[in-house]
Amino acid sequence: MKQYELTFLVHPDLEMNLDTVVSKVKELISANGGKVTKETNEGKKKLAYTIKGQDFAVYYYMELDLPAEAPAKISSTLNIVDEVLRYLLVTVDERKLKLEAKKEERQTDQADEAQDDKTEEE
Image 1 (cartoon, rainbow, N blue to C red):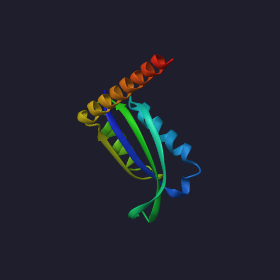
Image 2 (cartoon, helix red, strand yellow):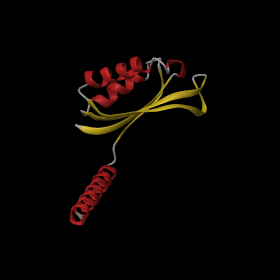
Image 3 (cartoon, one colour):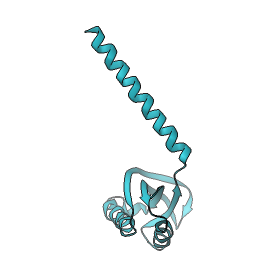
């Protein structure tokens, strides 16, 4: 399984019923053998230009693990879903993953050092 990032824009009128759209996208992902590892609701934002007659959209971001054939199937389905104005499905850059791993390692090292310093003071 390969890691992907999916960002999709939901019709602004569905801001209160966002759960139904998100669950539909999650079902699509799981039906194609994938799983959601992280998700974030970025909120309603003004678009740079009008998309399907809308000036605003709700941005939603997901990190996914997908098998090789799943992105094509997910893309073809998201193209025809009325609730989703636009989407972007891309692979995660390996360099980004390595950078994040190093960053987490540094943070845990700093936390360990802070804990050691605290115990020495006592």
